[in-house]
Image 1 (cartoon, helix red, strand yellow):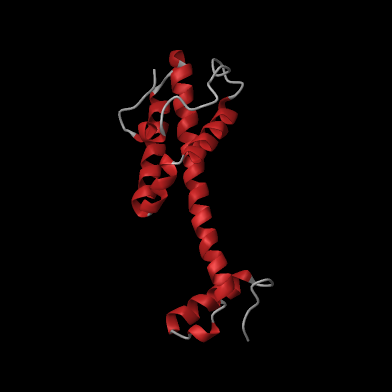
Image 2 (tube, rainbow, N blue to C red; image 1 turned 120 degrees about the vertical axis):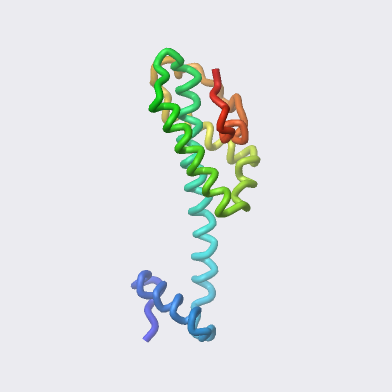
Length: 143
Protein backbone atom coordinates (compact mmCIF):
# COMPACT_ATOMS: atom_id res chain seq x y z
CA UNK A 1 0.00 0.00 0.00
CA UNK A 2 1.29 3.46 -0.89
CA UNK A 3 2.19 5.80 1.92
CA UNK A 4 0.26 9.04 2.12
CA UNK A 5 2.11 12.29 1.48
CA UNK A 6 -0.03 14.01 4.10
CA UNK A 7 0.16 11.32 6.80
CA UNK A 8 3.70 9.90 6.54
CA UNK A 9 6.02 12.15 4.58
CA UNK A 10 9.13 10.10 5.42
CA UNK A 11 7.64 6.83 4.16
CA UNK A 12 6.13 8.59 1.14
CA UNK A 13 9.59 9.97 0.27
CA UNK A 14 11.22 6.53 0.65
CA UNK A 15 8.59 4.97 -1.62
CA UNK A 16 8.92 7.71 -4.24
CA UNK A 17 12.70 7.17 -4.33
CA UNK A 18 12.18 3.40 -4.68
CA UNK A 19 9.75 3.83 -7.57
CA UNK A 20 12.00 6.34 -9.30
CA UNK A 21 14.97 3.95 -9.09
CA UNK A 22 12.91 0.96 -10.20
CA UNK A 23 11.55 2.83 -13.21
CA UNK A 24 7.95 2.22 -12.12
CA UNK A 25 6.94 5.77 -12.95
CA UNK A 26 3.20 5.05 -13.01
CA UNK A 27 3.25 4.79 -9.21
CA UNK A 28 4.84 8.18 -8.69
CA UNK A 29 2.98 11.00 -6.99
CA UNK A 30 4.11 13.51 -9.63
CA UNK A 31 2.18 16.47 -8.26
CA UNK A 32 3.75 16.25 -4.82
CA UNK A 33 7.16 15.34 -6.25
CA UNK A 34 7.15 18.49 -8.35
CA UNK A 35 6.13 20.53 -5.30
CA UNK A 36 8.95 19.02 -3.23
CA UNK A 37 11.49 19.65 -6.01
CA UNK A 38 10.49 23.32 -6.03
CA UNK A 39 10.77 23.41 -2.24
CA UNK A 40 14.34 22.14 -2.50
CA UNK A 41 15.23 25.08 -4.73
CA UNK A 42 13.70 27.55 -2.24
CA UNK A 43 15.49 25.81 0.61
CA UNK A 44 18.84 26.18 -1.18
CA UNK A 45 18.10 29.84 -1.83
CA UNK A 46 17.19 30.36 1.86
CA UNK A 47 20.43 28.71 2.95
CA UNK A 48 22.38 30.94 0.56
CA UNK A 49 20.58 33.98 1.92
CA UNK A 50 21.30 33.05 5.55
CA UNK A 51 24.99 32.53 4.79
CA UNK A 52 25.11 35.87 2.95
CA UNK A 53 23.38 37.53 5.92
CA UNK A 54 26.07 36.14 8.21
CA UNK A 55 28.83 37.36 5.90
CA UNK A 56 27.33 40.83 5.54
CA UNK A 57 26.81 41.13 9.30
CA UNK A 58 30.46 40.20 9.92
CA UNK A 59 31.63 42.69 7.30
CA UNK A 60 29.46 45.45 8.81
CA UNK A 61 30.98 44.73 12.23
CA UNK A 62 34.45 44.72 10.68
CA UNK A 63 33.84 48.12 9.12
CA UNK A 64 32.21 49.82 12.10
CA UNK A 65 34.09 48.27 15.00
CA UNK A 66 37.63 48.72 13.72
CA UNK A 67 39.03 49.01 17.24
CA UNK A 68 37.81 45.51 18.07
CA UNK A 69 38.97 43.59 15.00
CA UNK A 70 40.62 40.28 15.69
CA UNK A 71 41.79 37.15 13.97
CA UNK A 72 38.57 35.35 14.89
CA UNK A 73 36.47 37.87 12.97
CA UNK A 74 38.68 37.47 9.91
CA UNK A 75 38.39 33.69 10.20
CA UNK A 76 34.59 33.86 10.48
CA UNK A 77 34.44 36.03 7.36
CA UNK A 78 36.72 33.64 5.48
CA UNK A 79 34.72 30.58 6.57
CA UNK A 80 31.42 32.14 5.55
CA UNK A 81 32.86 33.06 2.15
CA UNK A 82 34.14 29.52 1.69
CA UNK A 83 30.73 28.03 2.50
CA UNK A 84 28.94 30.43 0.14
CA UNK A 85 31.38 29.78 -2.69
CA UNK A 86 31.00 26.01 -2.21
CA UNK A 87 27.23 26.39 -2.48
CA UNK A 88 27.59 28.46 -5.64
CA UNK A 89 29.99 25.93 -7.15
CA UNK A 90 27.60 23.05 -6.40
CA UNK A 91 24.58 24.97 -7.69
CA UNK A 92 25.78 27.61 -10.18
CA UNK A 93 22.22 28.75 -10.91
CA UNK A 94 22.11 30.23 -7.38
CA UNK A 95 24.71 32.75 -8.54
CA UNK A 96 21.85 34.73 -10.12
CA UNK A 97 20.63 35.57 -6.62
CA UNK A 98 23.97 37.22 -5.77
CA UNK A 99 23.30 39.83 -8.44
CA UNK A 100 19.56 40.19 -7.79
CA UNK A 101 18.86 43.60 -6.25
CA UNK A 102 15.93 42.41 -4.13
CA UNK A 103 17.90 39.44 -2.79
CA UNK A 104 20.87 41.68 -1.97
CA UNK A 105 18.66 44.23 -0.21
CA UNK A 106 16.85 41.56 1.80
CA UNK A 107 20.18 40.06 2.85
CA UNK A 108 21.48 43.48 3.91
CA UNK A 109 18.36 44.33 5.93
CA UNK A 110 18.57 40.97 7.71
CA UNK A 111 22.28 41.59 8.39
CA UNK A 112 21.39 44.98 9.89
CA UNK A 113 18.94 43.26 12.21
CA UNK A 114 21.77 41.07 13.47
CA UNK A 115 24.09 43.95 14.30
CA UNK A 116 21.60 46.59 15.42
CA UNK A 117 22.36 47.72 18.93
CA UNK A 118 26.01 46.76 18.73
CA UNK A 119 28.58 49.40 19.49
CA UNK A 120 29.22 51.69 16.47
CA UNK A 121 26.63 49.89 14.31
CA UNK A 122 23.70 52.26 14.81
CA UNK A 123 24.28 54.34 11.70
CA UNK A 124 24.70 51.67 9.02
CA UNK A 125 23.06 52.67 5.72
CA UNK A 126 19.75 51.16 4.62
CA UNK A 127 21.36 50.04 1.36
CA UNK A 128 24.44 47.87 1.39
CA UNK A 129 27.56 49.93 0.67
CA UNK A 130 29.20 47.03 -1.23
CA UNK A 131 27.93 44.34 -3.57
CA UNK A 132 27.69 40.67 -2.68
CA UNK A 133 30.31 40.03 -5.35
CA UNK A 134 32.66 42.36 -3.46
CA UNK A 135 31.75 40.72 -0.16
CA UNK A 136 32.68 37.32 -1.59
CA UNK A 137 36.12 38.48 -2.74
CA UNK A 138 38.78 36.95 -0.49
CA UNK A 139 40.71 40.19 -0.17
CA UNK A 140 37.70 42.46 0.56
CA UNK A 141 37.55 43.90 4.07
CA UNK A 142 35.71 47.25 4.28
CA UNK A 143 37.44 50.07 6.12
